[in-house]
Image (cartoon, rainbow, N blue to C red; front, side, top):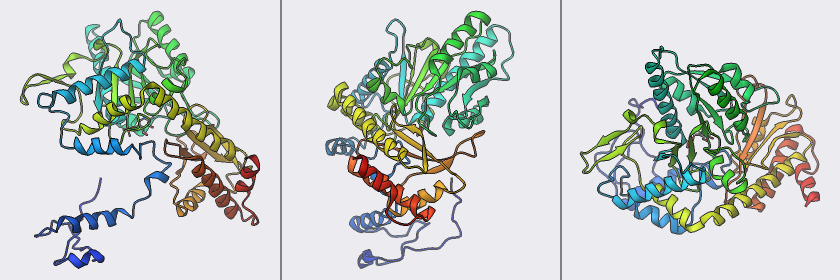
Length: 457
Ligand SMILES: Cc1ncc(COP(=O)(O)O)c(C=O)c1O
C-alpha cells in the first residue's frame, strides 16, 4: 500500500540515457510524450539496479532462477490469460495435469474425489481452503439448528501472516497458541486447549516461515480423530505446505504429513518456492469434492463454454502454470529428489558450520527443510540485526527478526537455501557471518568463523 504522491513534481534526473532525453520525464505522472523503447528499457533497467541481487537473497523462499529454456517458454506464454479456459483449452488441460500431479504427490486418496486449483500463491490457496472450511462448518451448523455467528480457527503463532489476514478479512476468530522460549511450533496439546465445536479448521504448518520447523501434524490429526468420535465435532485440518510440500515428498517419502492423515482435508503449496517456478503460483488441493461447498464454485459462461472457477481474483498469468508443467516433465521425481537432496546438503552444511561458532546457537540445522535459523548465544552482546546489516554490505540479504509472542525476546537470523546456492557461496556466507560477528564484538584478529570453518573442511 502506498500513499499517492500527488504533490510530487519530481522528474528523472538524466543519466547517460539523457543522450536520448528530449523532454523532462516525471516520476509520478504520465509524461505527455513517450520515449524510444530502448531508452525506456535502459532507464527502467538502470533503476532496477538499485534492487538487491536475487541470487544473494536468502530472505525469500521464492524461486530466483530457472533454466534458460524455461525463460524462453515463460516469454512465449506471457500473453495468455489462465482464466480464458475456453480460448486456451490446452493450457487448461496443463493446469488440470499439474494439479493432479501435485495431488498425487500429497497422496490424495484415489477412492475419493479430490479437487484442486492453481492460485497466485499460498496466501490465496490458504484463504480458499479456509473459506471452504468456514462455509462447510456454517452449513453443518445450520442443518443442526446451531448458531453460526462465532467461527474460530486454531493456529500456532508460527503461521505466516496470510493466516491472520484470512481471520481478519473473513471474520473468523483466530485462537493462536503462543510460542515459548524453546518451542516454536504448534503441538497437539496447544490445539486441545483451544479447539471446540465452533472451530472451522486447525491450521498446521510443514516448514514454518519463522524457523523452518514442523507442527505436530500426526498428533494433531489423532486428536481431531478422537474429538470426532468422542464428541461428534468434525474439525478438519488444513496443512500449510507452502515450502515443505515440495521438499518432504522427495526427502522423506514415508513421512505422513499429507492426505495420509485422515483429518487433512486441504493442503496448499507454493509452486514458486520449491516447485522451482518463478512467482506467482500456488496450489490448493481438497481431499474430496465435498470439502469444497459447491456454492463457492462459480460457473462462468461469458468467455465461451462453462468455466468452473474457485479463486479470489480472475485474470492471471498462465505462464507459471506452463513453467510448473515444464519442470515436472524436465526433472521428473528423480530430478526433484536430486535437487532437494543437494539443497538440504548445502543448507545443513551451513547449519553445521554456523553451529561451530560459539556466538551462535542453531535453532534449525536444516536437516529436514532448507532453512537455517540461528540465535545469539549472548543476545546482550550480539545484536543479530547488526549482523544482518553488515551482511547487506557484502551483498547478502539475510533477515534478522524477533519471533512472535511469547518468544518475542528471541531474535533470530534466518537463511533459506535455494537450488542456485553453491557450496562456494556457503563458504563465503559462513565466513562473512563470522567476520560480521567478530567486528561487532570487537575481538579483532583473524575472523573466527572463517578460521574454524576452514579447520573443519
Ligand atoms: C509457511 C508459509 N505459508 C504461506 C506463505 C505465503 O505464501 P505466498 O507467498 O506463496 O502467498 C509463506 C510465504 O513465505 C509461508 O512461508
